[in-house]
Image (cartoon, rainbow, N blue to C red; front, side):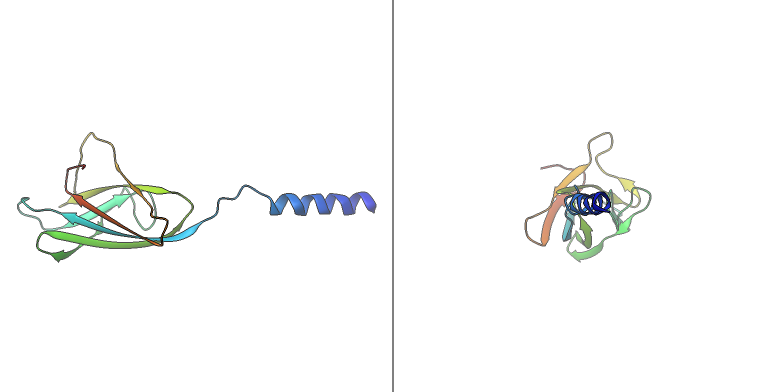
Length: 119
């Protein structure tokens, strides 16, 4: 009985001290400038983390003159996410690395970009 009690206590201590990564609810507001690009019918964003996917566009909405906006919220334990923007279903930055969007220490991160340009 004593061995079983010790086993249970050790097991519970180990369960509480597990290496589970803490997660936080993060909001990212993306702004994409498409000035100078002709025949823009649809602007989207694709990426790693929900609600994004690499398989389909998450639609962005026109915010003001040639600037599109999308606001995404999800729970994550990561410090950044990776994305690429699309116009009419075509990816930007062909044969180049994805954009890394580092999350702010605050709840909301604002990310501003120009299509097909890394600054």
